[in-house]
Length: 373
Image (cartoon, rainbow, N blue to C red):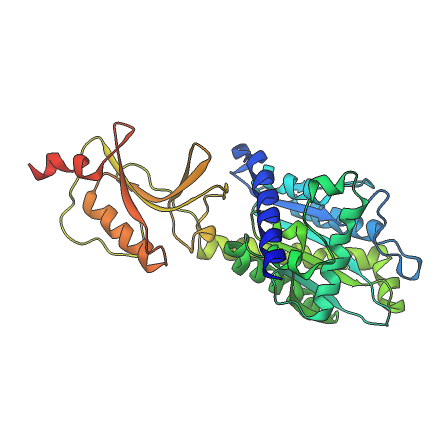
C-alpha cells in the first residue's frame, strides 16, 4: 500500500510539473479579471444521458450564458475551454486556464444517479471523500479513457484507484480557501436566490481541478436522471436561471477578492503596507532595493496576494527552472525588516531579506555597508 501510494505520488507530481512547465502566463490580460469557463464533456463524449437529455449540450448552454453575462463587465475577460460541441481533453482544459494565468476556473456539469436523487453540488479539490464523493470523482475522471494515448499522458493515474485520487489534492492546497469561498457563493445563490435544492459544498479528487493553478470549482447543476430536475435543466429557462446563479457568484467572488486582498505593488521606496506601522528612522540605501523572499518552487504561481496568505506586493522571478517569490520592494533597510516580520506573522517563518544593487543581486551585508561606515 505505502509503495503504491508513493509511486502514484511521484508519477502524478511529475505529470503536474510537466504541464505547468509548458504553460506560460499571458500578462497582457492582467489588467482584467480572467475567468475560464469550462463546459464539461463535448464531441464524442456526451456525458450522462439521464432521461434522454445530453449533459454536454446543457453544460455548454449554461456556460455560454454565464460568459455572455460576464462579458458585459469591462473588467472581466472570459475564456472558454470550448464554445461549441467539440471534445477537449482534461489536460487541455487545465492548460487553457494555466496559459491564460486565469483568476478563476469554473467547470459546469450535470449529475446522474440510479435513484431519483436531486439537487446541486459544487466541488473543490480535496481528499475528504465520502463514498458518494468518490463516485463523482471516478465518473468525472473516467473521461480520461476517451482520450487518444491516455496511457502516455496520464501514466500511473487510475481514475478508479483511491491511491491515485488522494495524490491529486497535494499540490493545490494554496487555492483551497478561495475555491471554497466561490463554491459557497455558488451554492448559496442556487438555494437562496433560485430556490433550488442544494446538496452543499463537497470535496473530491478531480483531475481537472488539480491541474489548474488558480481557485477552481466544479459545479453539478442538478441530476438529469431526476425526472423533474432533468426536464428543468433541459429548457432554456432552466439553463438561463442556473447560469445567472453562477454569474452572480463569480461577480460576488470578484468583489470579495478586490475588497479584502487587493494587490498593492510596491514601487521604488514608496512602500504601503497596512499590516504594520513603520517604526524607527528610515535607513535608505541608495541604488539598493531590498525584498523579502517568501517562497521558491518549480511551479509558476500567479503573484497575487490571495495566493500568498494575503501578503501584498508579491513579485515573481524565474532563476533557472525555479520560480522565486518576493514580498515588497524598498530601499529602506528598516522597512524591509518590518516586511520580513510581517511575512513571518503570516506563516512564512523561513523567509529572508535579499538585496539588489544597481539591478544585480548582492549580499545584504555588502549592501548595507555604506550605511554602517
